[in-house]
Image 1: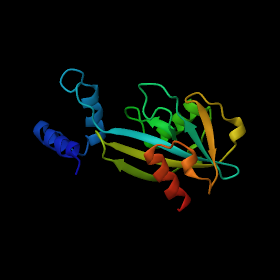
Image 2: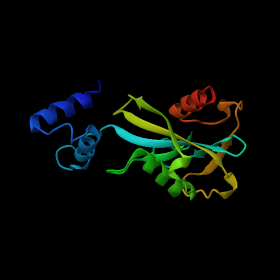
Image 3: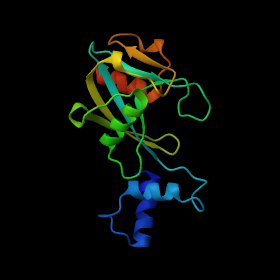
Length: 175
């Protein structure tokens, strides 16, 4: 159990808030938005990433900008980002792909593949989706340095991949 789950559980009991109507994610957002008492501590991030596969079965990845202040600067990662307050993970994935690539994905064309938890630092909960048969010629990059196309069997060592990205690609190709 994460310390945050224990903490939130105790806080919910203390406040006598029904767990049926109040989730850890809602409480996490509430605490992250409270600027006076909790402003000095960062809680678990909840994000979405999308494994995009083009018409030739190559993965479409993002080479992130190499600037200070962003997560994993200069690394090659999945396209994706944070979930907004009240937003469903699948809708967040569709929004992020639209913002970053001007690609409009319909709900039926994207599916959840897996979730993962990373426990380093404050922790990270990630939802990973898959979208196949993407026409890479129609993509317009709005975030990051470049679009990277990765073929199955190509050496992952050629790219400066984020650690979770490497694990996800290896697992996806063995799936």
